[in-house]
Length: 69
Image (cartoon, rainbow, N blue to C red; front, side, top):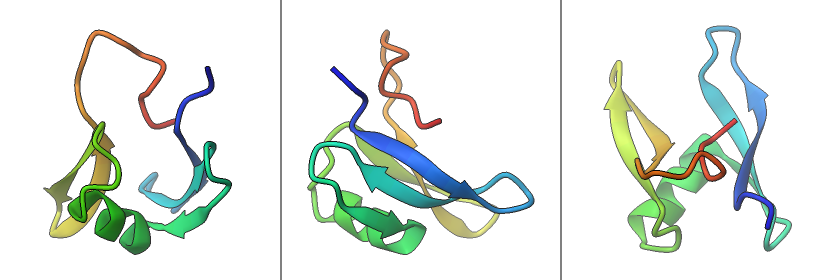
C-alpha cells in the first residue's frame, strides 16, 4: 500500500511546502494540510510548531512507510 501523503515541493531551506494525498488525489499547500490535520482528517499526522511555523509531521511509530518524504 502506498503511503498516504507525499511531499511534492520543498522550500530552499528544506521545509515541506506542498503535499499530495495519494488516496484522494488532492494536492495541498502546507497551510491546507495543517488545517486538515487540525480538523482530524489525517489521524496519522500531527502539527508541530517549528521555528514559529505550523508544520505537518507524521506520528512516530514502528513503521517507516508513512513518514513524509
